[in-house]
Image: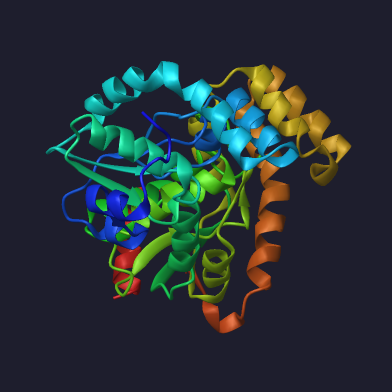
Length: 353
C-alpha cells in the first residue's frame, strides 16, 4: 500500500463519500470503522462504531510531533513505517465488521487517516467503501445541532426518593416516549448515585449516547424526561437541552418524606456500609458535621431509615431551591400518597392528557 499515492479523481472513482447526516439517516445501517487512536475513541465515538486504529496512542503522538517540528512529508514517512506491518491486520479486522459487502470509515476530520484506510480496503477487494466527510468532528457538530432543536418535553420532577426513574420506566411501558438521562449517565444524580453503577462515560460520549437514543424519537410528540441539574455525577448535559428542561413544564410529584425514606432503604440498604458512609461524607459541607456524624452512627447500627431521613434534609432543601428558580406557572405539584411507580405513572398520564 502506498499511502495517499492516488490522485483525488482516481480516489473519487473508487471510494464513495457520505455525509454524517446521510450515514445517520441510512435505513440500512452501514458498519462503521473508526480509525482514530484508542484514546480518541475512548473519549467519544459514534455509537456502534468499531475501533481499528491506524496508529496506537504513542504512534499518533510521535507522528504529530514530527509533523509540527519537522515536516508533513517526514510525518507521512514515519506514519508509513508504523502502518506497514499492520496492513493484513486491518483487512482481517475489517472483514469481521463487513456487512452486505459494504463498510464506512472515518477519522477525526475525514482526512488522510480514513482516506488511506479506505483506499487500502478497496485495493484489497472491499467493493463498497464509504468515507464520512468531515469525520468525527462533523459528527460532533451534528450532535450539538440536534440538541439545539425544540423538543416537546414533559419534565418529571420530585424530591429524592420519589422513584422518578421507575415512574419513567412505567410510562415507557404505557407507550410514552421516555429518555432516561441517569441510565445513560450511569449515575443516579446524588452522592449515592454511583453505587451499583458502571463507570460513567465522558461528557462527550454521554452526549453521543444520548443522541443515538433520542434521534429515533419523534421530537414533535411529548417526551418524558427527568428534571436534572446541569451535571449528573461527572457528566454534563448538553447546554441547549438543559435550557429546555429548565424552561418547560415541570410535573412535581410530591410524596411524603417518610414514604421516600422507606423507598431509599430498599434501594441502598444492600450496599456495603463503608460505601454508604463514604457517600455521606461527600456531602459533609452541605449536610453539616452533626448530621454526618448521626448518619454514620445510624449506618453502623443498620438504621438505614434514619440515614435516609437525615440525608433527605439536605436533598429536599436543595431540590426545592431549584424548583423555586422556575417560573411559577411552569410548576405543577402533584400530591401522591406513596412511592408506587405503576399508580403514579397512570396518575401523570391522567393529569397530562
